[in-house]
Image 1 (cartoon, rainbow, N blue to C red):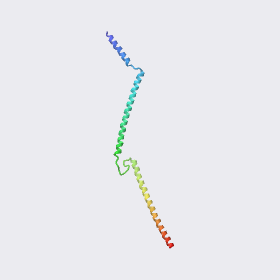
Image 2 (spheres, one colour; image 1 turned 90 degrees about the horizontal axis):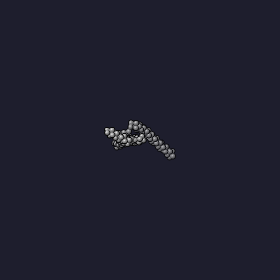
Image 3 (cartoon, one colour; image 1 turned 90 degrees about the vertical axis):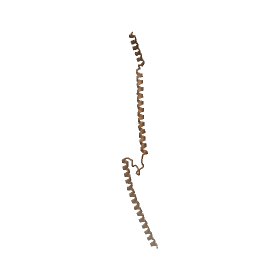
Image 4 (cartoon, rainbow, N blue to C red; image 1 turned 135 degrees about the horizontal axis):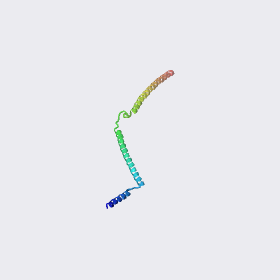
Length: 130
């Protein structure tokens, strides 16, 4: 009598295992779906992290642009190399302006001298005729 319930439970366990048992193809299919789900979840998490990081960088750039103070000197908040370049350009501008001013003054002086000589020549011509 004891063997009958034991035999019955063994038969039940075997039939349950047969119902649960998968062939290899089905196991590979389930493993593939699990792997695909894991990859898609990782991609979604990575995309969200990048989106959050990009939004924070955009906010930082926007905040910097809004807080930009207007100063008397252009590019005063630029990198050091740019500021050095700007100083060199200001120096070159000062030198060139000085040279041009000097040349303009020389040309004006020469024109005055030419006008005076023309006036003297005209005076001499008038004396010769008259």
